[in-house]
Length: 197
Image (cartoon, rainbow, N blue to C red):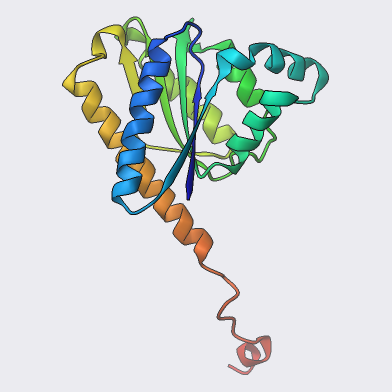
């Protein structure tokens, strides 16, 4: 079972951020299932955890639903992370959630990054803010990040980017499982044999 966690930081309900997150999750599930993987999807709506995130920043301890969300992200086989863009960067709520994770929580985890904004001028935020964040956290950010301005919703271009990113996510999940399935100590040459030549 592939565990896919979708982290979305939209502030309104409904939000364009959540709409994009749902589109990415649906495409990823479809792609993973086509590759023969069963998928369990969990959505972490940061708007509902805002107070708990602030409490965690002040106390150093996650509680309740936030502790569950942190554990889900740490146990995920892949993460889809979607943020609205404010002041040319990710939202404070989005960043605060990733600040409360343990340093190794995302180690090697494939992350599909995405962002939404009212104008395409903010599209580079994925490269100058999100990619460095997830690289710092030792995650494995996918090559294709998906940005959607207001006018992109319903366009063929957005659908194409969503499908491409979902395919990359599937490839990354399959590669990661293959790497972890190999036991590096299964066929070890004894040291004595190495010394004898």
